[in-house]
Structure formats: C-alpha cells, structure tokens
Image (cartoon, rainbow, N blue to C red):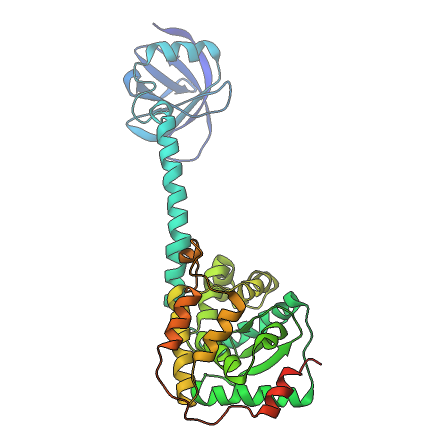
Length: 357
C-alpha cells in the first residue's frame, strides 16, 4: 500500500533538537524528505508509536530511540496504523500496561516511605554527633520563643522560688556535666510537663510542679530531661522532623529562618522520643541521682501519679515511650541508698512550689 501524495509532518532526527518540517511518503518504507532530499527511510517493522496529544501521532524507531516523527494527517495516520506491524510492540506506548504503571507507582511510594522512616532517621543519627554545640545552641534559641508561645504561659518569677529552682538545676548540672550551662524557668501552664531544648533552655510547667510532692520527684524528672540534652535527642528529633527544610537551611547557613522555626518549634513540644532514647534518658537520670546520693524512685512515683498505670492498656506497647509501669520498675530496681543531703531544704521546696504565686 502506498501513499502517492506527500504529507507534511514534523521531524526530529535524534541528533539535534532542530524541529524540521518535512514531507512523508509511505511505501515499502516510511520515507522522510526535505526539499526533495531523502533524510531517512524507516522500515515499517521498526516503527513504534509513542505518547502524544489528541489528534497527533508521534512515531519513533526501535533502532533509534531518540528520533521522532509527528503526523497530524488522519489519512496518513490510518495507513501507518494498517501497514506497521509492530506499531505497538516493545518500546511503544502500548507496551506500557496499566499494571506496569501501578507497579512503578507503588514502588515510588514505597521508596518515599522508606526514605521517611529509615533514610532521614539514619541521616539524623549520623549527622547529629558531627554538628558543633554552638550550632545546637543557635537552634535552641531559634525555637525557644515559639515553644514558650505554645503554652501561652508566663515566667513564674517569685524571687525565693526562682532561687530554689536555680539551686536545684545547678545541683543536677554538677553531676550531669552538660556541655552548656542550663537556663532554667518555670512557666505558668497547667500542663504537667517538663522539657529541655537544645542549647540549654530548661522548662518546668506549673502543672508538673503542682503534682510533685518533694524535690527528689522534680529532680528526677529534670535529670531525665538532662539525659535527652546530653544525648542530643532534641537535636536529632529536629533534624528528623525538619527533614528537607532543616537540611536546606543547614546547607545554606539559615537554620534560624522562619520556615524552619515554625516547623520545629511544635516538634519539641510534642516530642515523643524512641523507646531506646527514653530508656537511655532514664538511665542517665538514675546515675545523676545516684551521684547526688538521692534515690530515683520518687521520679517513678511522680510519673505514675501523672500518667496512671498503663499496663492494662492494649495499645501501650505501640507507644513511642516505654510503658510507665516498666519505667517505674526500672527505678524501683535500683538499690542505691539515700546517702546525700537533701537537694532543697523544706523551706526552699515550699518557695519553689509557690514560685507562680
């Protein structure tokens, strides 16, 4: 079957990006000419169809994957469809089935999930020890204001209470040996929590202070938070949750930009460390309290008072922090006797309890 009248088409020879208006003759082969000069002769069995817009037939050669011929003439399209036996053979649009598309899409999604849950945490664990403490302090300062704003509380500033709190923190620091001096504060929030930001900002919320019955309970909780600081868990979590925003900021030297701060401030407030990180922080707290000659058991009693016993919760095994009953058991299994002096006197403890009044 032949096509006597030449038909205009667009041709890309695969050697350059030049767009050429050509004439096409269909005979024993598909002949492509320009100004009556033969540019190419495509064997019909080697022609493959590729994806194109409506009304356009885009063709290529199995032997030259980069060349393309675009035909918009319906009559020529019909003849090509009839005369080219492998138009939808290997390498054509027809060889890519919906099943292949779905399979590759699922593979792409799986790769992203693996990167999020494995790649970024692995990168964070590798990168964290390499970052200088000065950079960590800058990060902590950058998210400090937003972290305070989350709770909407103000600093509790009763002078005697502030002095007692600073004394408690410094006693812990004398044994914890953090790489920077902690900057303590009590916030007037009813949330029973305490946390330490990268860089040394240490916070106790009034809700936790209200539930504590003695200085050892509060000291144990703060020593646990110091453990996260010593192990740089907060920094590691910032890198994990900040993801590409943090890494881009790190690359270009803008780790305190608004985008990073907004992303990471809430991260620290809602921090739920891994079970291994929580266990390591507990071990750190136990050692600090032992070095002070105090028992870690009151810390477990405070945690249990706040959270309740989770042993009957069937979902507790999936929590990102160790089950409270397990943590209490770890504190109770420590046999060290109370040999050191009280961290705070009874009068100082009362002052600390009244720090927000």
